[in-house]
Length: 483
Image (cartoon, rainbow, N blue to C red; front, side, top):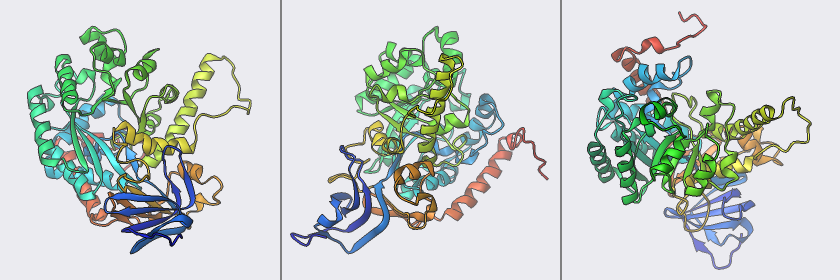
């Protein structure tokens, strides 16, 4: 370590530093210096001019930016995994709407906390969330209180839904009511870590003129606009009820909505030309490969965006379909889903095509890590603050101790093994820092008791299953005998 012109900082982290800066520099023996909430230095350890009362890491450690999850429905914690054995409409109307709709503020807190702990204990420091459970107006407050207790960053989108064909009556609200509540949530919850915007689920969940007015509010207030596109009901209702024969993104462009502040979730099953249209309009994409893979979407295609320069991040969707709620799984799924999709398209295009062994597979562990860090930050329009380890940015940092991680040894292909091995085990996560403050130490949250969170979540689900008569969906179509 350099001793000339030493500077004081609060924390020094040492190890293999994966910066995710513009040059994608990796310092094999590097440091990151933190003062207050900000990064004040990063580089080679031998050149480090900083001293600190706390020095973390060392040989055998990885220092990298906190991960960014760009799509979630956190209130779904109470229905985790219940999609198994159900059709889309069975789960949407049978238990999704009823069980999440029965969640008031306290229940939403209990429902959201386990998936939040899943995220932060594995190094996710920022999450987006799309919340449309407003039967109880302060359901969203419960989720945000859970977010605040974990210390994570959150870009919360409050979704207004009101189309009678896709939305139960209790969930519908007028545009004025939705905007008023969004502004109330902004006033009560926004701070340096939480931001709030207005959005809707998808085109066919909100009356057309109100949908456009909702988007216009986000433009007027310099906010992002989330939308699932194409949403499942788009295929069912766009032509029949809206008279639109084209694709979802073509509709958004036609009415003037598709633009740089739009973050479109999933974005698969496009019509020819829609990916180029998205690139031309500057919209951003929240890729959700783990959910797509679980549901068997063999034609997943992120390549069409990345090769056209579209900004993309990785998300998980809700725990009802993102069972383990593990963003590291999404990193691996991004690569495997894309490669299976490429092969599917190749076999369709070339009858009798065979594997020859000289094909170069798309993507890499490095690309997946980019999408989960700086890519996610760009997708959420937060890359001026987070997503990379650079001087001046917020100190959102993940410190991994790989010395006991057999799946990360030997280290020649360390980043590939990190991605394909589904990330570090929880006990190898030595620190997770958000804005320079430690929120996870040695795999455990420093404030939230996860055993209490599990107990409250279990009790909540038991209550809700009987309260809304949804127990018939538990282990639906199971082949096992439950005694």
